[in-house]
Length: 327
Image 1: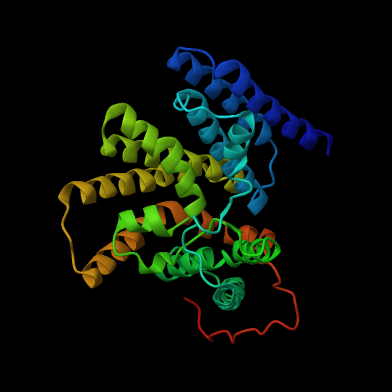
Image 2: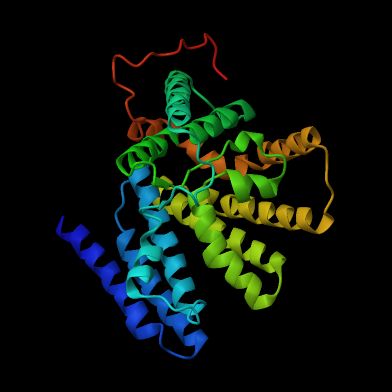
């Protein structure tokens, strides 16, 4: 507890230092170097001795990166914008508490629809988890597809919190949605930009893509930089949480390839029929996904054991019957 409190206090001191000491410095490069040094140092300290194969470790690494990215952007690239310390603090910590006004939030459905969606995702997620624990899965496209479904249905946890926030605030505020039916994506740009992991997308767009695009007057440089940093984030997760050093380069290459593919999509400006776009997008995702999914499947017994879904042991929740075969 003492170490955790020390880390929280250290991050708060870092935010104070960035706003009151570093942000007023007139030289952009100096602001960037000083902020980056503080964030890298604190991230290194925070990510020491994290539990292996545990979602807590993955979450901690991601939070450190996203707060650092936000701090570097606000301190280095947004100094012409007048920000009070309260606004600066809320923007920095938004990744931990992604609350937004209901009127400006995207992908918001009526509460009753959200509840129905939570039930469907929960049942599917529990079903896939139980099937995965029953089967000895190798690295195959069937196993990768199951892992993909497990990943996009786990968002029921965030959506439960979203419903509570909307009810408690009389539907004035909500949480940023985690996903927006990524299975319906008809292009890679739509998948990464509008449908998958909306929280990370918001941070990356506001704090990396937009500043870099404005700095170099190039959307291509902004997109490639964003995917490179996203790749480094996931490399760090692989190293810290999964103990999978052999997967570090393939993980990085997955995001680099997708960054290049999204840039090519932008340059070509070809409007494919939606069914054709959907097929091409998901074939590309399926072909490249072994690069990033392999460590999770290789470490599946440990990963599954330490990351049981929420409510998996609640007796009154219906359990869908498991197939008699393994994927």
